[in-house]
Image (cartoon, rainbow over all chains, first blue to last red; front, side, top):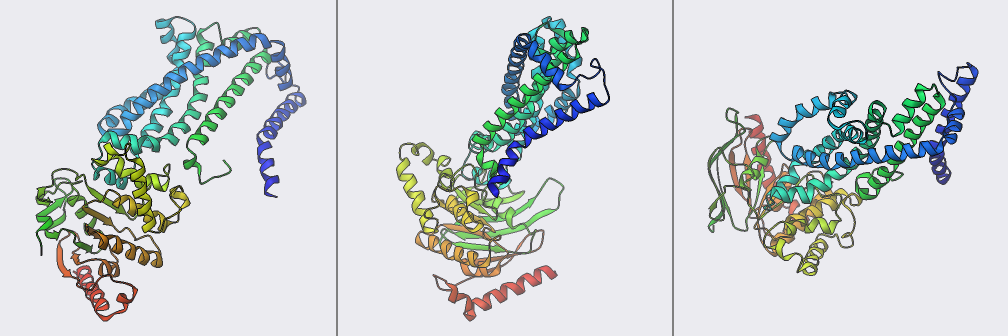
Length: 257
Length: 261
């Protein structure tokens, strides 16, 4: 009985995806929505298949841009998060700046980046970085700052230095927070790189979609969207698996995870 | 009484410059190897006392002397256990118990070389509190009482001269609590270390301590220092003898007075 239930839950994501596509297909056909407004998923997939070489090339480029920006965000986010989370003065000083910066729409920064770095890959990497580092900073800082006061007392009364506390307790304790932020962050990085590619690039899925829409090839635009979504899901799932493997202790409450 | 190991002279404490007193003029002398308990109504600054003695918090006035030295910063030798076991969930029980040895000098420098020896020591200690076979389990696989035992081991593994206990058995059921009293008493009798136990359980204080201090409502002050001369080792039977019952009775009336005041 239990076994049956578990198998069912594993199939759920596929069932829901297929259901969504079926619903979409049905609505478009039923209301005879013209293709230049909303193409059917089947038309999008077929179009994607026809352009598979181009899509592959652009998708690889987008993936590369995203991962590069994301990698910078991880390094930067961990360092800044460690600083912010382990020192009250730094937290107080940096917090309004971080929140303010995070509130700026990153698409507004792309023209600035283009002025500085020219059109192409560099502004896309930087946009991906800018949009994705914030959750990492916040989560790492939270993980470090929420250390139980009793535990801190135990360690301090043993003669532990700040560094001891950070290494023995702070970082291991912040790990689940960190991994949770990676999942959010990687999907945001896709948003950043695709925005920048759309505005100022001649490579990547964002550019592909822009040029397809200028030729009214809506199925190809949607094929691009589906590819981005698929890459996002794949990356999210990879970090989800890494998270579960490396911080088993934090997921103990939910063994089905 | 032998020369005191911990001495508080005219100590007061207030949080912040203008705040009310958390602890009023307090004087205390604790001998080396003495087991004392502090009881009092909640919020009377019992836990502040622990922080003062361990140097985690400086007194606003007066001096705290431990081992002939005035306390100026966190002492580096203190074992601590709280109501919340605060074990690290990513470490096994054994690794949790070994934690202080990774921090306290000189052990931290010897740990790598003498790993086997230290692990042996931790296993023995775990065995004495009845955690044999749980060494490789994670804290969340242990019951509350077992976690508290492990927490006690962590507080004692580096053989501290001073052990601070802040309601360590407060969250446990009565049977487990009394079993842990016996374990703590046995560990202490084997090789006496100085213990400051903060509790609101008067039976616990009467069972374990040599001297019981009753604190007033906030601002905390020591009202009564009651010697407890019941013979050791004390056991379950002791708790049913008239002297024990009288002692608890007496403490209870002190607390009643304090609360009424």
